Image (tube, rainbow, N blue to C red; front, side):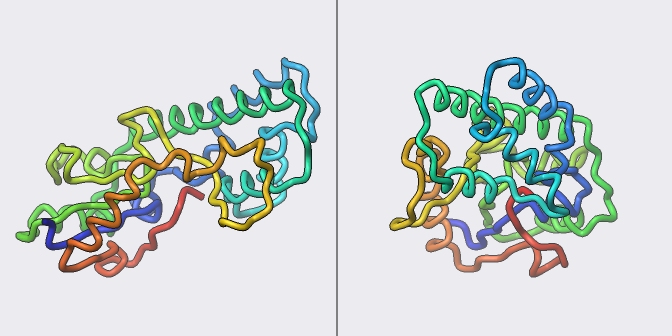
Length: 226
């Protein structure tokens, strides 16, 4: 049983200086590659997930890709099998491209040791309490704060709610309310169909004597990838 459960979100990576916002990804070579590749195939722009995301990313200074996916799923449209196969392909490529982008920027990343997130991890190394981390990111905080081996490299210490880069299998999509009217043809983009470790989150929170976000010790917020 862990005495302390630590919840880490994308505010942690951003404080370290990692370009992990959705807007960073939309401007990346990885997204541009799948977008240009998809344009080579026949598609109607209004039925394209990639076109829809790119359009919204241009229209806003703050881009939430999962909220945009939700809006796409909520649109009233009946897809032909050809259109549906195209959207499935685009979504599969989108997940892979995001994984590739974060892997690339993480592999060459060197954290600023003066950042609050880095100091927090150094402090956790010295923490005498048994602790576990619930990670909403895809990245490994220990690897981002190398070369100092801050935490044990074991899967038992981390619970990745949305998958991890290590497994090359990340959860990306949208949350759907029970009575919400959405397009059932696009159910493959519902996050609850992909979550693997949600039960571990509840167990860790219930068993911990104390639950803390790094924001309680530092001044950055936890959030989703944005």
